[in-house]
Image 1: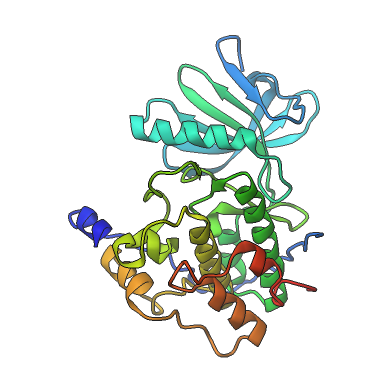
Image 2: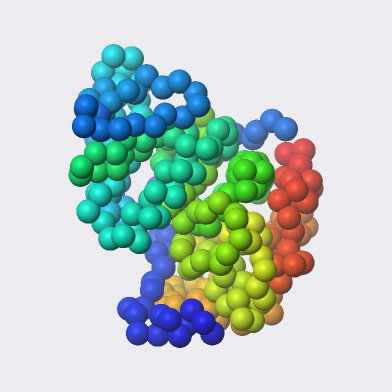
Length: 316
């Protein structure tokens, strides 16, 4: 398999499996209706009061990622809270190209189902994104706290992600890395899609292998087996199916309990077995929905429009 050969000599990849916790905090998801003079900035179409980075006061560190840090900030004049994602500009050329694509995509997006980018600042040392603050963290955090979600909550979550994916598809944008840590929750319980570091605007060419392998679809992991030609939208649907099943089980669903698989084990789990095992304890609507998302053959997999009409996410 192509990617297996490429990664044969790399370090084993492991998955972070949510550990059992003694205390559980509950969360409810909202169901949607159908800088300085040396810095340059680019604002989103909606007006933003953030004109320079000096307008923002850093309050706390929200997290660290590959090559950057996310801060909770407050506008000095309006007192509005924002998230500030700061990426070092001394990263390698490949990472900087990816970041430039992300900035270009974020400036195009205006959707209540996607975390909003208010402005992008570039200076000699950093690339900074002024983002909507999502007060309740990520779905990954919520899973660690609550472990499993009931079906009505999963339905609301799936509905919002599908609405976001429909918008992105209309914009010809493939997200490429739908996973719990890239799904953020605001104070109203609204789940929104975030982090476009693995995304691309569809304009032909290869799909690419950026993203998190545990949530990649079969055609991304082994295109030689599952066929070329899919631009990436079906891959986002697969990733949604993995997330939905993870919310139901409280753990990564494509491997056995306690496993810490390397890349080869993930390839087998994603590509080799005929079907993904779906718990019989789920309702017919739930199992049917997950089955449509996790169809191995992307040509037969459910589309976003089809899944938005599925009984599992309708009339919930």
